[in-house]
Length: 173
Image 1 (cartoon, rainbow, N blue to C red):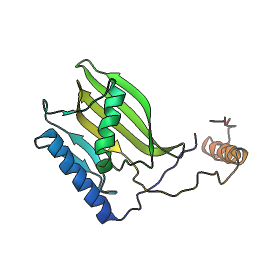
Image 2 (image 1 turned 60 degrees about the vertical axis):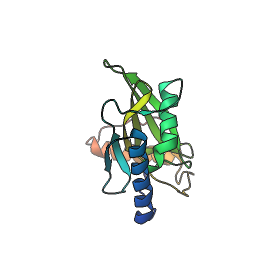
Image 3 (image 1 turned 180 degrees about the vertical axis):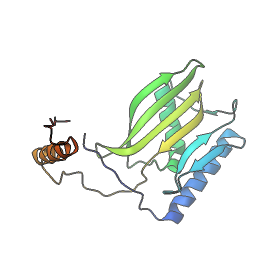
Image 4 (image 1 turned 90 degrees about the vertical axis):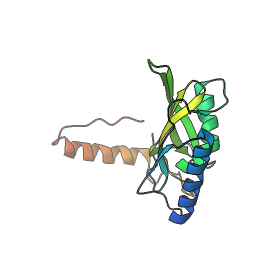
């Protein structure tokens, strides 16, 4: 897979206003104090949790639908906006009955590394979110700068150097 690795380039004060508004909206939705942490690098929300019994109710017939509904309403504080796609990468239920839904952030069909969001639910309510997202808006080309063969050849050379001269096989992702 080709992967985009990007940093946040939006003005810090604009991001801070969005994150602060997101934090206030989450507190209002929970109806009580919440735990909210933000990244020192980007200022975006990275973690949110409600006290037990104060989950934020969301509509949806599946865990994925409820997670997406929550992120559609509260995702801006985590840097998630309409310019990006979130793809489901996993869904589990633990022994306590909590549902965990995992997403990868994409931009124009390419995964962004490391941009992942985990939504944790107790019943029909969201209990916590862990996020590492890349904020928009972005205007980046997704056209490869080198051919696939040139990338494979470079990977072979680097791999051979790291493997003390041993031959290295490189496949196509």
